[in-house]
Image 1 (cartoon, one colour):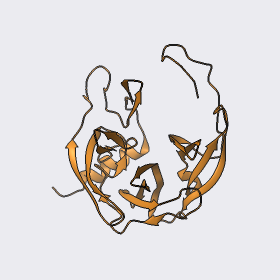
Image 2 (cartoon, helix red, strand yellow):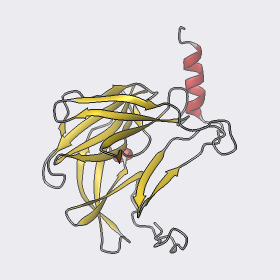
Image 3 (cartoon, helix red, strand yellow):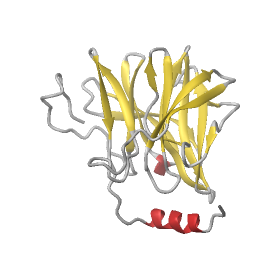
Image 4 (cartoon, one colour):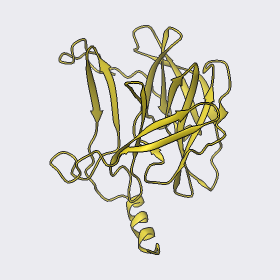
Amino acid sequence: MKKSDDLSHWSSPVTVLDQPFHLSFPFVFDYAGDVFMIPETQASESIRLYRGNKDLTDFTFERALLTQPRTEDVKFNFCDSHLLEKDGIFYLFTSVSYNWTYHLELYYTDDILNHDFVKHPLSPVYIGNDFGRSGGSIIHLDDNYYRISQDCSRSYGENVSIHRITALDKHVYKEELYKKDILEVGGKIYQDGGHQLNVIKYGDSYIYATDFRHVSWCWYQLYLRIKNAFVKK
């Protein structure tokens, strides 16, 4: 973690969380007067909540929000989890790959510190490798909510798309594709794509954070190419 008051001058990096399993996709948010983080911890077979100290130099484990044992069908467990608070309810989005197909699962609770998460009756709200894995946290802009997805239909993180959530409560979930493939793949920066977009308001401006991908050989890409070669058109 690095800090800045003006986005030009930055502090030295500090490790704020060290765990004996893979960490990524750190979703950070304010709640009940403290700062919390939900990193991707799929190797632990759980979605874990961490609370930050006063100067955010250390995060400690608070509780497991969800747990799910690994089975033969589960290839990736609880990927890229994040929250959306709406009308006093916290909605938890997470992606699970069953037999190499991503399912976007949705849960909810009214208290993330003390109450259990309940699976939404329409969960999974999307099934497919094109839009089923998140590529960033929910964007709230002009009374609209936008979900970010990453394209994993041919290989991991080929592009990013945006979906507008048109209805969401404890009984209903609806979304529509707002803009597909927002990254200019093949250009100078996004030569082979990218897999995340996050947006935050800073003062009167918005900061966009994204990434780019340069492909090298990997076993999963080879697997998908072989699989796609045998898929009937």
